[in-house]
Amino acid sequence: MSEVDNNQTLNANNITVPQIYAPLFQSDYKRFLLSSGRISGKTSMLVCLWWYFINKYPSNDIVILQATATEIKDSIINEIYKFLFNSGFDVSDEPTSTYYIPKSKEFIKIQDGNHSGMTYFYPITDSSGGQRSRGVTTHHKLSLVMYEEAQKNKDANVIEQSMATFIRQLIKDGRIVVVGNSETIGHWFVDYVESKRKSKEWCYIYANCYDIWNLLSEETQKYIEDFKRTNYIEFKRIFLGDIKASTSDVVFPQFDRSRHYKLANELKVHYIRYLIIGVDHATANDTFAVVPVAILDNGTAQTLEVCYDDPQESNRTLAPTEQCEILENFIDYLDEKYGIEANQLKTIISCDGASAPFIKQLEHTKKTAKNKRLWKHILIRGFTMKKKDVNLGIIKNAFAYGVLMILNEGVTSWDNTPNKHRLAKEIESQRYKNGKLNPAIPNDLCDALEYGLIPYYTNCYNLSFPFRVNEREKSHYDDIRKLANLK
Image (tube, rainbow, N blue to C red):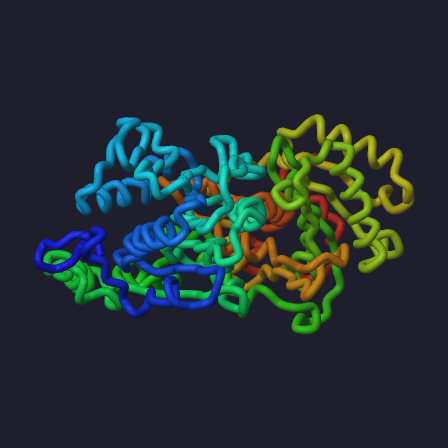
């Protein structure tokens, strides 16, 4: 380890592999996932694994990936440098060094006459979120591909897209190792870990500081024990990787799947009185999202099936006309299932008020829609209530009062594709950073939920005392529009 007793340091003559990490070197698995808290020896094991593979397969290349180019410069390459330096090897940024690491830290070239393989360091994404590692090839077949700090990437799709590039270049006995720190509940990496744990193709290794306790320095042990005494909750989160230990930065801690995320057969039967379809149109490389919010006869709200198109999944961005075409097909689906036209269901499409061109395209779609009788009942309005903190507070209250239910569509989504539970996952994954929503976490479906829900629940009366249908139903419908500036 990096912090071993007696002031010893990790080097080529001092390598100790804790039992928890033995499968990395001894098992027949080809894919590994390491997830744990801090100070669990993961990085040191990656260095050892690198050293093992670079010598076992000297004619093959190794690829090590980080989320961005900035992350690479402060990554495992520094630990490898220290390992080589402490081992007494000739390592520097001089091109004539035996272990040549340029200042750019893009690769390691071993010039000892025995190694023709190189070690390359690649960022997975660029500054705009585009794939940097897609299509990359090295000079030789790969013996090892390692993902360091995987949780820092945008989502699981980024990892999988990158993996698809390199898995084809692996030798027969090559290995893929994904390493990340446990995050709080709702983070995409938590779901990623769970999916790989269920796969027979992956070996999952969980470790924490106590698995390497005897290898830690006395100073490090004292630091951990003191942290445990003074802040036990944070200790569980940081050092034990307990994803439920802290919710201080969670945006919607009130949301609980057991209470708010139900299958249709688990819900009581109600009539739909109004339908507000929240639409977050896509610009650039983000997700087009549609979340219909049904206002029920008892005054509570429930989302229906959701519709979205994520360019990270489809590998293409949609034009406004294509988004409107998807929306038209989706509304046809809602009509067939819930009877919008047959019941003359009062329906509003509520989309971002700042997206005037998209609203114009929607209005054109209404005029040219195949089912004009259906669209006759649909109003198109811009959502202008952009006080984000207020709106998030309303959604939190809706969950807290138990007057908002998120529909679990089950195995498949409305278009018969596998249900990825995107809305529930987005609700769980939202985090604050420096007092604001973390912009690195996707929230397109949450925005669509906001556009669909706030026009109704901005009236606190609807939150506290669910509306019962009476003779003033029409005026109440008009109030919904006025309160949301949907004039």
